[in-house]
Amino acid sequence: EDQVTQSPEALRLQEGESSSLNCSYTVSGLRGLFWYRQDPGKGPEFLFTLYSAGEEKEKERLKATLTKKESFLHITAPKPEDSATYLCAVQSGTSGTYKYIFGTGTRLKVLA
Amino acid sequence: EAGVTQFPSHSVIEKGQTVTLRCDPISGHDNLYWYRRVMGKEIKFLLHFVKESKQDESGMPNNRFLAERTGGTYSTLKVQPAELEDSGVYFCASSQGLTNEQFFGPGTRLTVL
Image 1 (cartoon, rainbow over the protein chains, first blue to last red):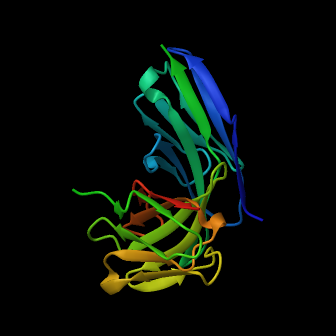
Image 2: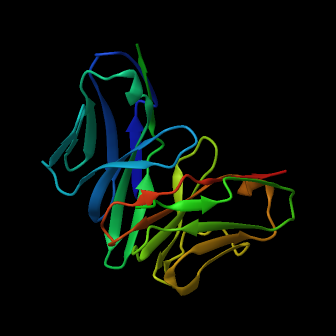
């Protein structure tokens, strides 16, 4: 059964303290892995898409990497405004029937 | 460019009543998805439209849920009759292609009393 697991569930960092969030997945036929950021009361906001092992994407203080079994979201020198829930989603399936499977997310709190 | 919009933002109804949620996708996006997040759980897929056709509705919980997409534009999700376990946040998302990133709306928080 396709599954996505994110860890840790919650993370508190001091401003400037770098860390990584993990997304482990077990799916048949990976089409892509997506990272989203979600603020309270809002919908998920797209961050990155990764399609193949070894791929990396960067945006400001965030960097996403992908292996055959997991993805990491590295946060370098975070700021309080980076506080949010970070969601990982995996898209799998065959032609015409692609499904998104979400993890439960990592709640990040960055303290000033 | 306008994002995905959903209406209403909140809905509180009693068990047994009917509720209709609406989603307006980003213009030009053929793919429209509905998801639900029950408190404490992950966001779960409900169904996927390509234009006006249901491509995949394997995530729909039961036949109390009915989704439509008129003319391939906006979509509605009707729950009739609502049960307590239907409470949660219902998200709509749209994408241009099947493997492109999905853009999410702000969600509709449904509370069934």
